Image 1: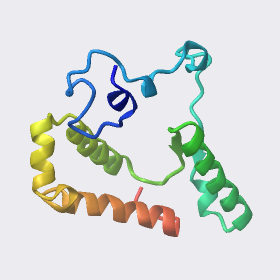
Image 2: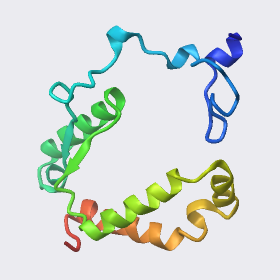
Image 3: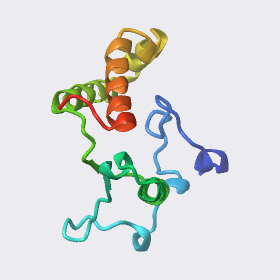
Image 4: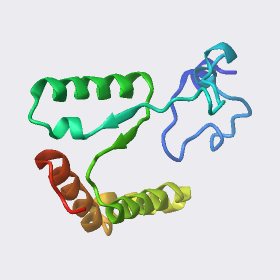
Length: 143
């Protein structure tokens, strides 16, 4: 294994598989003793309660933001509850994300070439983001 290939990062469309590497670069290998459990009885997904951010309590809000920051740094994923975003908006956002992540390399490059979220999906994206701003920023929104 070359030291350069072994320590490199990969960008979308430039993964280890697409480079034709026959091994997993060392920086991506996690020793068995450091791996997370795949046993569902032991796996825990942190939960972020967005209602704490909408309360008129600066201390609780600050604690929630610190907790979210720690979870992002140390766990990398979490479940959000009490966000106030209606199911139809969530379904649409999930559909858009799923469509994006299911693109083949050529589809991604075409999406990128046409401006990405600034292109044909811009209005849908703006509508989702505006709804999130209303719900989180002002503590209200359509349900």
